Image 1 (cartoon, rainbow, N blue to C red):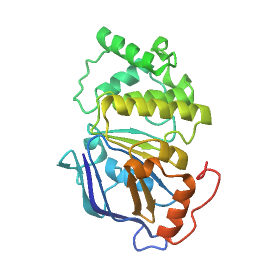
Image 2: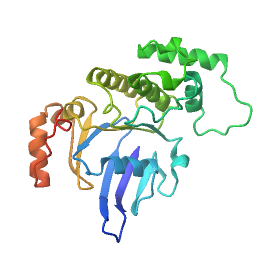
Image 3: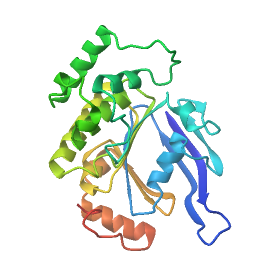
Image 4: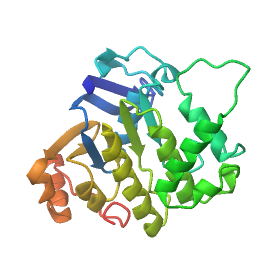
Length: 264
């Protein structure tokens, strides 16, 4: 479903601020894989997701989605293949538009639009039923402006919007980092439910090692723009946070940062 072949990306080349963000990185995801991604600050996690999404071009290498070479395509031409949820709950939705209008926009992603556009009664009923499953009472707030909702409610809506057209690939970019622990746990539960229900191929970046171990069927660790660890199956299920820290120190040749966020 996703095939990354030796991609590299350097920012500000030839200047004092030159930064090698990705170095000949390769990664293959089968359909239905749910991969969690961990690593220290500056490891290249978000750069990898942005490269996949087409936010910026890679310097070398190729990116294939569902067999299609998307390497030369800009971000908007990949949008019909990719769903994405960002760290900031304000991103991914139009805060000044109604909830039902946001969902309708997500439904039409990648389609041609004319001047005549409306949300049908059938669509509204579908959105109400989908929102009811979230268990947040949002099915009764279809006409509310999204900007008036809480951060957790927005992230839940963004998750729903990202999966409405069942994308080939779902990117979760630290999508619970800005939420309080209880809300983050709820959003992660919803993420699991949506991914499993639609069998979505998913990449989830997280700084929380416990979440990285608990969710998904595969875990990769990044350092200095490279993948230094890739575990799955029973090996992943039996991992502990302490073992991950030790593996990082062994493979990277340096102790992993032990700040509260990384080891929460």
